[in-house]
Image (tube, rainbow, N blue to C red; front, side, top):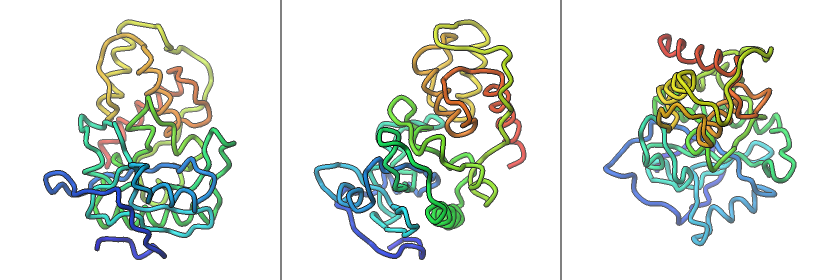
Length: 249
């Protein structure tokens, strides 16, 4: 069994299968549960009717519960895309973080929980040699469907501990912006840059619903002070710095 030594319990889910074509995990995807508490989340993740599962769940107090053996394909990513890949369940480790989510007030992530998430991520990333740009939010890989773990999740803290890709966001100060319904070369440049970074989109030159959803996902992860789907100068400059930073990792 492949697992983290940080797990204090194992509650096996039936919602598993082999990774396709023997693929080894090289991606880490973070979620929130969207459930009232960890016990209910565990029951749901272990219920055959739910058709969902994950490798680990971190509860509010920082306990780490293993749900699926790392060697197996858990059902956490759903319909998703990154860097042109579609079957992300086969290439990823999924961590669910207990939080009731936006629909239930979206409370802060407790300190004990964040400490455990950081330690678990460090362990998973080190053992599987996961590249920083492949430590992602559920919203990054499924921007039209998901918004978790959301703008309150502290990606900067993870990066400071050697997990994931991050740059300090450009301050919001007005300036030019692109938004839903706009079209033209500037939109093509924005879409092309988001696509090269990894987001699943085509370059159409039209700021459509998908582009807006992807900009929201980008903001939740990399510019969380304002999530509005508008590609303002802060968003665009932050994206540009991330792309420039790829040369250094």
